[in-house]
Length: 98
Image (spheres, rainbow, N blue to C red):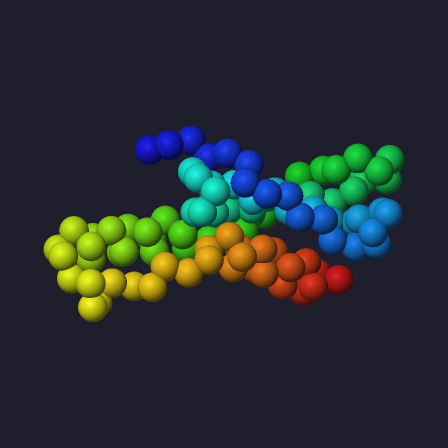
């Protein structure tokens, strides 16, 4: 199993003073697995929060590869833009906390 690395960082809030950020991690750039949420403390430093957002990339990739192993192309799940979906998930999470 490969180690997760930082794929992308999203910041939300005012342009010159974002109040929340999400760091998206995954085994590669196309398969985000989770995001860590950060908020600013009173001194303006980013503090990681205990909760993480989990994404279904790993399960989807396993389903796609097992279907492909059998040679069935008709039943293969469509691989979506998982990074874009992860970013949307982070934005929805931020919106729900405002």
